[in-house]
Image 1 (cartoon, one colour):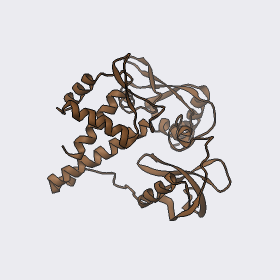
Image 2 (spheres, one colour):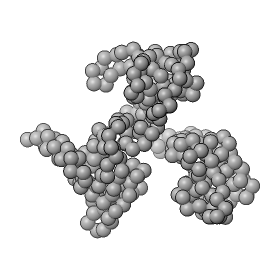
Image 3 (cartoon, one colour):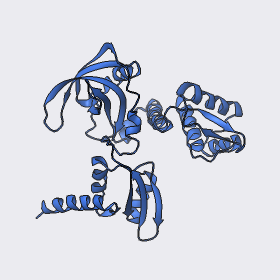
Length: 300
């Protein structure tokens, strides 16, 4: 079995167990069979063991429910692991296709302006994060286009819209800052070790937001109304993991999110134009209306 096949099985097992339906072993086996994997009981057992021991995802058996579940309290971020599997799975699939036929790239279209600048920084930054080592680098500001040198305590690598960002704390400050790795120059991993901040988990900071901007504001219920056509895309690719459908008819589909609205979320709403309407909260609807009014004036 190829690496691609193994990774695909891991993904399917996590998907099935992660729906909190406590599937039995036979249901997991049938689910794999439905997706083209006719494997032995021992292979599935080995897959579950590998997922647990190699990746820190605790898959356990619940006897009263007679099924398997993911222990989120002892697992290392299952959502990030699933996203990781998706990326690796795609890369393995494309690599195998390229090996089979050299003209594979003639039938694949990538973003024409894709920019992988700074990707070489991922490995040293990950090393620094895992070993609590300070880093220094020069960073270019998008707005001012000025460069500034920083000394940072790194905590997290975050992906957003096919770009990677470093989340860390500058000098003696306590607030987290975000740096695009494509704008990091002259990266140096220091020998100096820092004591990680335990009161704030950067992953938790972004848990209730969309994108890169976090805040300590209160969670809010955001209700959006989509056209039936746009709703198909939103159903297949939710805006946030808290997304819940509360109305679905021929005229509209309403969804509810529990998030802290931020800049990136508002940008997503504006990008959808007439295909979406903010119903709640009122301040967000007014904010979007104001932005659209200003945009309309640009065409007068």
